[in-house]
Image (cartoon, rainbow over all chains, first blue to last red; front, side):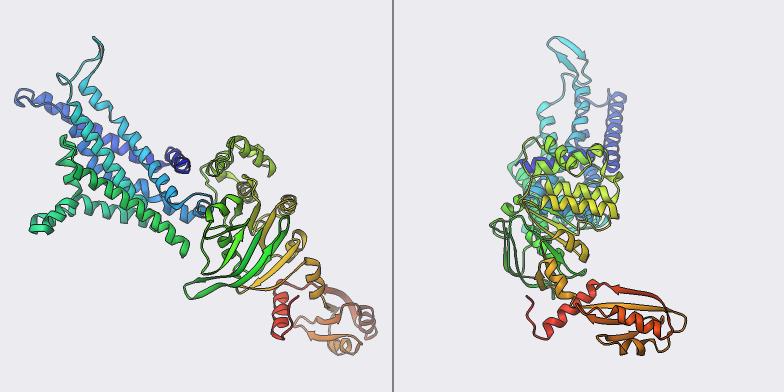
Length: 260
Length: 311
């Protein structure tokens, strides 16, 4: 446990001196900021037509889907591939650290970094909801009577699970490669398949096959469930399975490296 | 401290090391001497728990390197040949990270002390990316020392250092080796002679011989080879040298010089010099040729081929 934390901390610190991490953080926050602003402007403009509708926090969390698909490969590509290239993997593999501790540590470091970016976006629900301490209103709410907090918790849980799954798969793929660029493209392709493509066969096929593909579709588990405020066991199992699969792949790849 | 028994490692069809058997006692500095590709790094990687052997067993500090890999890794300090450093960390951060991985209490203090030990305390807060080759090597060594390991395994610790740094590195290793077991690899014969208590010569994955540097030296220097150079035309020089009693193996070189050998203890150089001068040649140079590592290997493998058992 302690080793996992040591490795995660080193990885987390590393992101703050890495230009790629800043580019990723900037890209995500800028895009989400623009989406939020447009949303607000849209509702202000159409305030009279949009009967009863208010800006929802799901427009923010929903945007994370494609943003994470595009940005997480850049965050995970170097995690283990670069250690292998630099020769520092030899250092970690001869230190008293178990292979899975190394992989989980790397994953956790990446996750903490992405969660830091996600945490910044909490400013948007705060803007919508306003801040009131007791009877004193620090920031007046944009939406009355405030946002749906359960929906917010559920959709942010969705974002965290999405990030954790993508990162685990990314770490697993990075462990297979010595070349960062190869790791990046394989990771990106995997995400594109899981996020956009795997759902298509579900609409073409019938019966059990269709069900299987429908279950594999990542978007469905996010948009049709968590990002709508419903937390189902089947969705949680799906995300935790992906996390386990990614971390298991990573650990196996590191072990295989030893045998080569 | 280190016991290796029948250790074999195959990379696909290529056999990197072939049933190596040796041991190393506490407080002993053992040198692994061999050309590139002899299997030195492979052996070290197995002993540090980086990779498992194909066959055979090895124990380090009493623990099996495969079955009790973590225990072994806790007790071994390892400096790989490509010194593994994070350029984006300062020397102190790097050592603290390694100390944390090894669960050392007061990691920061230990990290600083170890930096002092390798004379890098002034650069503790500089980024490793800005370090010179010699400094990088020393940070690498510090990383191997930080947990005060019982066994230290150093892969080519002086490679790429300038002469002053080499001398310094060697003295550091000798100092450390006083109370710890050190296994180091090198392809420089003099280095093995200077630092090691015992030398294992390894070639093509097999131990060719094993001895103290002194014994090895005297065994190898059974005969001394000398080069003779004269001014101007050297026609007939080799014939003249050959006539001197005790001279063997005369060879004329393309540049006009002549090489010959004599048995240790029968120094015929004065006679050769006299013969050369009497022949009317102007003697420019007479110089002994040290045996190169390559020649030692040839010598040793010839020994084995003729059935002599290496002592």
